[in-house]
Image (cartoon, rainbow, N blue to C red; front, side, top):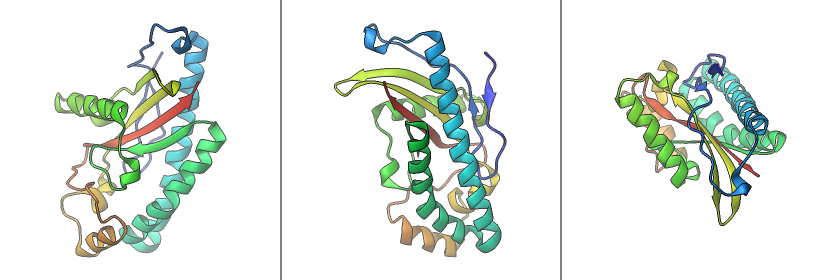
Length: 202
């Protein structure tokens, strides 16, 4: 199957979403047919695309109206609402996470951290962030079997106003006010900013 690509969108939200990184456990509860797997992948892709495009639209409007500070406020208020709405629509949990988080609520769990470190390793070896294949796996633990899916988020040039190394004092003050424990700065264009993450209870 060919890689599927989100429509290119600003602010570093574009990502490649393909079909690599899949693993199944030996237990019957974690097994699925190829048709079921492709449906899981397709639904995950669709949820990510809708989330990314909706957030991008609101952030672009905020940037045009009030610059990076207004975009930060929109991201702070609207991103969680958009996540909740799309999660309910697709019947799966959607979010964003990173090794350098801005919102502590987006901290990666163990599985997500492993995938993020994998993305970073490939990026360090020369794979462009926008060409990183996604990771997906059926994970079974005491809570049951869950389909997990992650797609890397490349850092776009427009992201650097709020996530880069040369951030204005006004933007720094806004980040300190809304995200006092912010770690999500110091990025350069082309870095792995983080990842979209999907969880679906099976």
